[in-house]
Image (tube, rainbow, N blue to C red; front, top):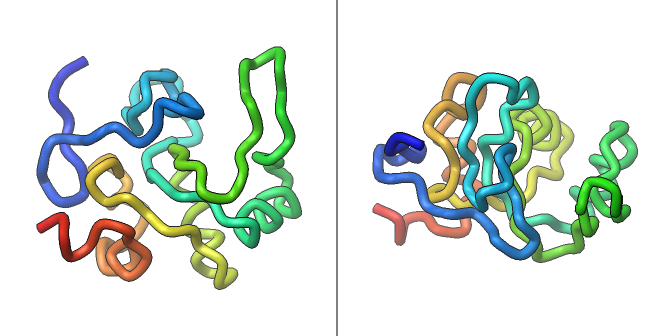
Length: 126
C-alpha cells in the first residue's frame, strides 16, 4: 500500500491492532475501492457513541464471530465511517478522534476544526 497521509499531512499512523480495525483489517484507516463506508476516522469509542450508533442501525458493540468482529467496548479504537462520525457530531455525541491515525480523505466530508475539537492527540500531534 502506498504511503498515505493523515489529516495533519503527516504519514498515516495505525489506529488499532486490538481489536484489529480498518476496512482492510490492517490496523490502519486506509481506504480504497470497495470501501463504500469510507472507514477513515480513527475514534476512541464511548458508551454514549456506541448507544447512538446502535440506535442508528449500526450495532458496533455486539460481537459478530463469523466476521471475526469482537464487538467494541468503551475505550477501544476503531476506524469509523466518516459519515457516521459526522452524524454523531451533529447529534452531540461524537467520539474522540486520533488525528495521526485519521486518513486525509476524511476532510472531504468533515471539517479539520471539528476533528481537532474532538482529538485525543491535539495539539501534541503538531
